Length: 84
Image 1 (cartoon, rainbow, N blue to C red):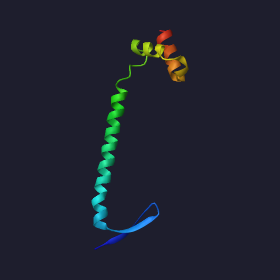
Image 2 (image 1 turned 90 degrees about the vertical axis):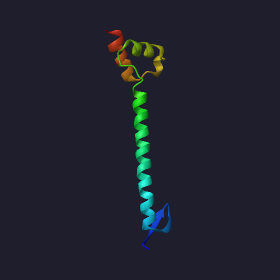
Image 3 (image 1 turned 45 degrees about the horizontal axis):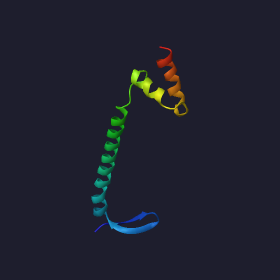
Image 4 (image 1 turned 180 degrees about the horizontal axis):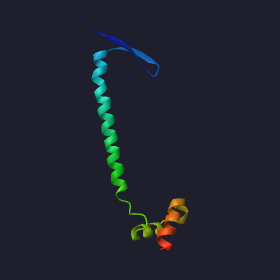
């Protein structure tokens, strides 16, 4: 049987190449699933925000404490909600 030395965190052990190949697809598929779920979550949350400059966006920002506004939000508010 082919064996190779595996080191992880300073601890080394011998493992068969077949064993390593069996674990490889699992790591790839779990990374893919994690990436896909993260992308779906980002798209879902991003889809909920009202469009900048819309009536709803202006109302939401007006209700938000002014100290919590970002510089971009303040500029967009002035541009789209005050200087229409």
